[in-house]
Length: 383
Image (cartoon, rainbow, N blue to C red; front, top):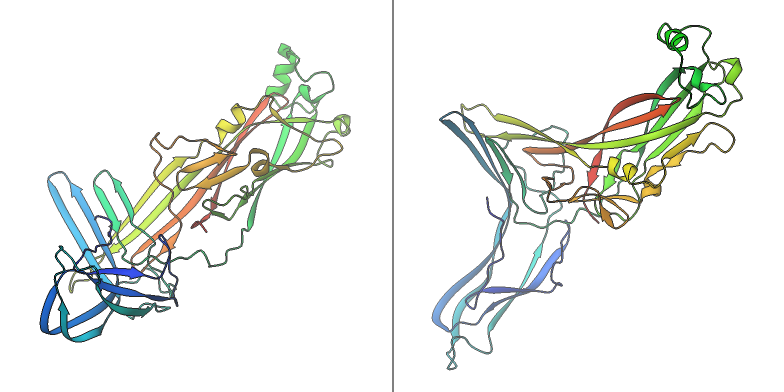
């Protein structure tokens, strides 16, 4: 479905009292004038102004040569008012249009809520669904899912708290390389055998890894993404021989994979059950590139001064609709197959949400470990 484009010519066009690109919020009043520059002479004319908000959905299911299409369209806002009734007289002044056009003042109040409609609601808890700022479209393989909007609502005034979600992982490392001076030593056959059979003679180091990730990220925000990593030693579970030995934990990389989920309902015809479709897309935000380009590896020590590492501040990580950025550089080039990042939203028939899969790779005493966490993350529209 194509984008809705504003139309206007010398027959009729709007002159709104707002700067170019201005967005409106529920409760605002649209004011301006309706203009006509083309000549007209008529004893009776009626000019009506209509205000419409709608949502369209089309789901295409294809299997082989069989193709089934479900369409739906709902009117959320639809009212009309007569702004002029009477005779019109605008004479030709020797040009295609008159230099002094006819004008009619207009004023439209945007309601806070759409009108009640008989339509499938995605969730019963969706009391105040908002109309999308622009087109949202998913085009992949045999399924097409799209929606359009004729209203440009600004939802940036909705307050959101950037909450943090901590993930805790217990680690236990058993190795001769935990001993002082043995960090890079080659193990003998006997030592490798002891390690293979988890000999009680080997020292053990216990710790917990705390990865704190954001519960919400606002697109285009200049504030770095709240991403924090901390390693907390467990002295009680650590062997006595190395309790006072400072251990070095190397952070190999952290990956962030954005999982976009879209759920759609279509068709409200009588005797026809709704057609539901779920689509999921995974995009690697290429955060690991920031670690591979470090001049020296990121090392966390367990001795004095062990503080959480603010990964977001360290790389100045931000997210915009085209992907992840570090300072003024994009980590994942937009031309390498990355789809646009849309904010979360829920309408009567479409729900779009996100989850980020975080993968962390560590190296302790030559032992490589990788863990992953799935965190539902709300993507907020740009301010």
